[in-house]
Length: 464
Image (cartoon, rainbow, N blue to C red):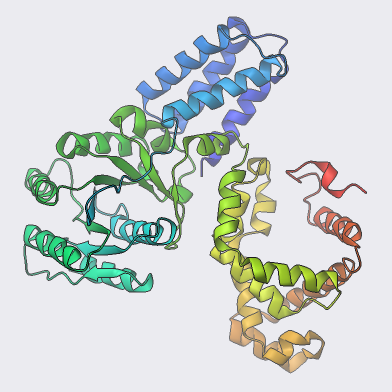
């Protein structure tokens, strides 16, 4: 996410980091580069102009803090202006309403509306602890109703079994009545994808809006459409009076134009951002955290929250105790750690939130891709319980069977066993307070992988 913009801005802002003071002359080239970076990221021209003018005005009139260099002060101004451009603060869902509080989702075809409806339902259920019902009124795409029902079952939440032969207004009213009867806290209505230029379809969604009287009307838009996402959202807002935006497929958007344009063009906040295909991959949109990611400062708050939500504290404690006592680290333990990693969105999701990761080479990023983790998990799951507990017994015929079961080459099984053997030796060094030895071993392993100097927390982590 934002890879291209992050790389360009970092390169640009380095040019001013060593300046003794901020003057119009020495920020002229930098501002030109910032402008180009934003335009290449497909940020709307009007937003780019406002952004650059504000940064320049604040930089030239800024009293430099005693604790910061002029270059650092300039980067701080850019960071703050990014936050302002995207909306300053997180805009939470407003669900203070007599049940059911209705959320109406609108958007273009293919924006990921139906999937977002299920993701939003899971978010409300797990994090806001409210009961949710899902209902589809998309009678134009018969598979949409079945898709939403299937997703509702997968997250174990209520859904209204819509009949595609009925008109959308009738379905909406029936779903509202059903939610009232079941005393559901929140009803999410998924509407058909439509174009702003399709007058008949726009009239229909206006009628649905009037009938349901939603407390939240959210526009679902694909981040990869860039500034067009903001322009389309504005057209829908003129018809529906949106309360916010859900930005989908942001994990595949290397530019970031939509995230930086939506608020300024529509006046409406981005409330959620979709960061992957998994049903859990929906995050509240925090402008300050996104601004930090764009400038490669990381997003440790989101990372901590992610770890807290997905980590079994008791299991983690038992694992730590086991390692400290030197009781061994089995392939079953390793498989469990890989499962935890998948629940948190994979390694790429974690790396994206660490400071300095934007400067990682493509070679290192490839070395930690999630596909390889899936291969490791498949290999371990193809082993018998006895083999997982005692990998020394895995020889020729067993390796062949495991490779066939996992759909991989025997070489990959051999590689896993070698890596696991090294990991076991490293874990044993932690016994009896040998954590420092283990960390030094890790440092050596990272150096062999070409990751030396890439520790985002500073070199002190591995010092004796």
